[in-house]
Figure 1 (cartoon, rainbow, N blue to C red):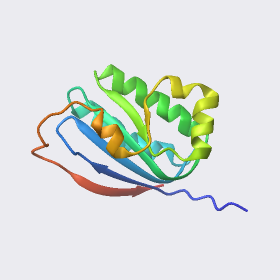
Figure 2: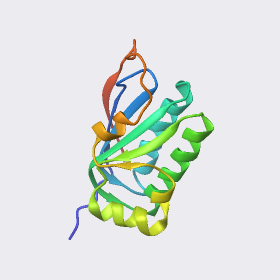
Figure 3: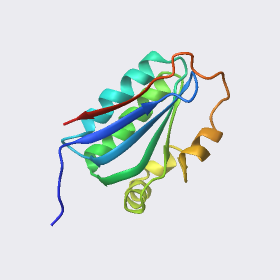
Length: 136
């Protein structure tokens, strides 16, 4: 039997002024996708031309609500003149993303370093923030 949790851990870091990496740990589903949105949307709204990288290394489960959240974040990023990309996507999630066609809509990278290499170069963020948030 699979353990289902209502907790999603999100770590936000800003390697540069316009690039944000959000590391996600846990399950992204009906109960937790709002936590991911709550951390990602303000980043997209606060930055000029934001480039958001989701590090999915430690994601255990992703359901259709999570996939819908990805699409919503992609639209928000494009609307803000920025981009969304995924890094370190687990095999099971990669199959879902490929089967649903989402892989045609956003860049997917093997590692966060690969994703960052493709982002615009700018000065390190003066107010670089790193923090961990946990919510249900």
